[in-house]
Image 1 (tube, helix red, strand yellow):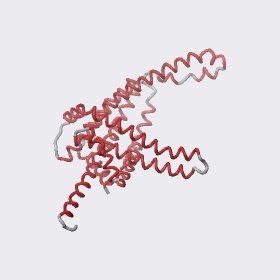
Image 2 (tube, one colour):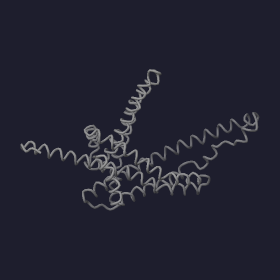
Image 3 (cartoon, one colour):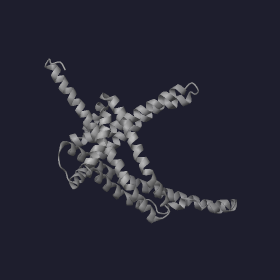
Image 4 (cartoon, helix red, strand yellow):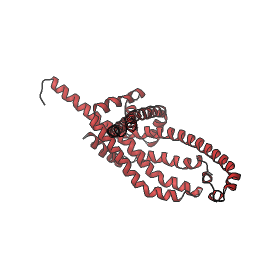
Length: 297
C-alpha cells in the first residue's frame, strides 16, 4: 500500500502546493530559449541536398568531399553545443530539484518557504544534489548493465538460451524498477537530513521494502507514460514549427509547461514515497516498543 499511497499523495501534494510546479516551470522556461539558442542554427544544412546525389556520380565526386567536411564541422558544433546544454541543464535541474524537494518536505511539515527562499536553498545545495544524481546514475547504469549480461548470455547460447533471455529481461525490469526507487529517494534523504552521505540510506530503505519499491518504480513509469501521452499533441505541433528559428522558440516554450509537470511529478513523488517509508519505520518502532513492554498488539 505504501507505493499506491505515495503515488496518490504525489498528485494531491502537487495540487495543494502549486508553488512546486511554479519552481519547475521557471526552470523549464529558462531552458526553453537556451536549448534553441545554444544549438547550431544551421543544423538544417545537415539534410544533404538530395538533387546533388540524384545527379549522378560526377556530382557526388565533385561535392562529396565538401559535403563530408561540412557535415563533420556541423556535427562537431552540435556535440559542443550539446555538451554546453547538458552542463547548464544539470546545474539548473540540480538547483530546482532541491528547491522542489525542500518545498515539498517543508509543506508536509507545516513550514513556510517563499519561492525565492527555496531557489536560494537550491543554489546553496546544488553541488551536493548534482553529485548525488551523478553517483546514482552511474549505480543505476551499472546495475542494469549487470542484469543485462544474462540477456547477452542467452543470445550467445541460442536456441537453448531462450530461457536465459526471458529471465534476463525480467531481471532487467526488476533492477530498473529498484533503480528508479533508489534515485527517487536519494535527494529527499539529502534535503531532509542535510548530508550527502545520508542519501545512501536509500539502499537500506529500498531493500528493506522491496515490494513497495518495485510497485513504486512501476507506478512512476506509468505516471511518466501518462504525462508523455498528454504531451504528444504539443510535440506534434512543435515538430511542425521546427522549420524556422521563431518556430523553434515557440515550440520550446509551448512544451515547457508539460516538461515542468513531468519534473514536478518525479521530484514530488520521491518525497511522498520517502514519507510513506518513514511512517512505516516509525510504526514498526512503536510496535517494537509496545512488545518490549510486554503488551500484545
